[in-house]
Amino acid sequence: MDEQQDDEGGERTADAPQGADERGGSRRGDGRRRKDTAEYRRGPVLLRGPQIPTTTSDQRLLTRGDRVAWVHEDPWRVMRIQSEFVEGFGALAEVGPAVSVFGSARIRKGQPEYDLARRVAERLARAGYAVITGGGPGVMEAANRGAAQAGGLSVGLGIELPFEQGMNKWVDLGVNFRYFFARKTMFVKYAEGFVVLPGGFGTLDELFEALTLVQTHKVIGFPIVMMGSDYWGGLLDWIRGTVADRGMIGPLDADLLRLTDDPDEAVEIVVRRSAELRAQEEAVVRANADAEQAAAESAGW
Image 1 (cartoon, rainbow, N blue to C red):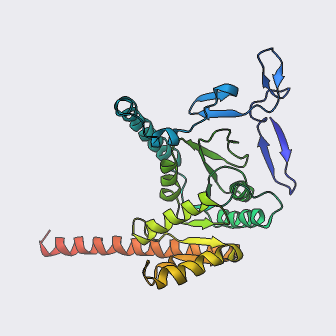
Image 2: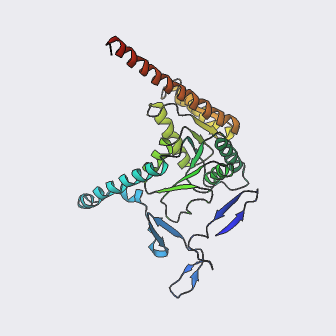
Image 3: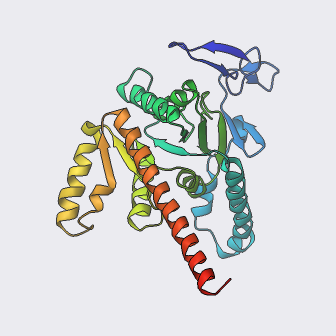
């Protein structure tokens, strides 16, 4: 492996391109090396060329098959799904305070969104948070890079996709998932908030799932910070206007989303909400301890 000097001073060891040996390319049937062959990992199994499946585990799970096939196949899928949760919980249990950062995989270095993601991740890392992303390119790479270069823990939660690029080189702790729902659980379970940069359908999916969990009190004290007022402003106007005016959400539900263009403000929102939640939890613990002591004294213990 070669040490690659980053164009802005950071160093990160990079593996050889996927599907390549020291000379480049991967083995062809005639003994020569083929160039830029895609690589696909399914658990411990490595597949290349025609061995790469054209469907994903999620797609096969959701495909309606005949009932006989369901009886034989789907119960085994339950075991695989269970193993993903067990492996994810085990890998992430000691991550510590963390924030999940989302955004488009299509963003490239040099674009404003890339720099914004990197800067907010740097500040999160310096504030003591690990940064969790989907582990891919674009905003994910920028956030992992910012966290790593600031000395923080950089986490990537990858997903099985045909011809995927794999984890970006800035991920320190990476976990690959077959199923979106298992992966999305980890994004929420091990984070103290979301920072959402401009993105497409995947980013919107993660944004609205978190928003629904907060609105329905499935998660408590979970800030959702949207970055990029020029990108998200129209969506928030629609939520606060059309959606709220027609009674589709409660009068305060739109306030569950915070919008800013300032990385420092984004981090401050997360830090302040985390501190408030910890104070509430400590108050509950003290109240319970006082109640137990009072009950013991009244019973003459």
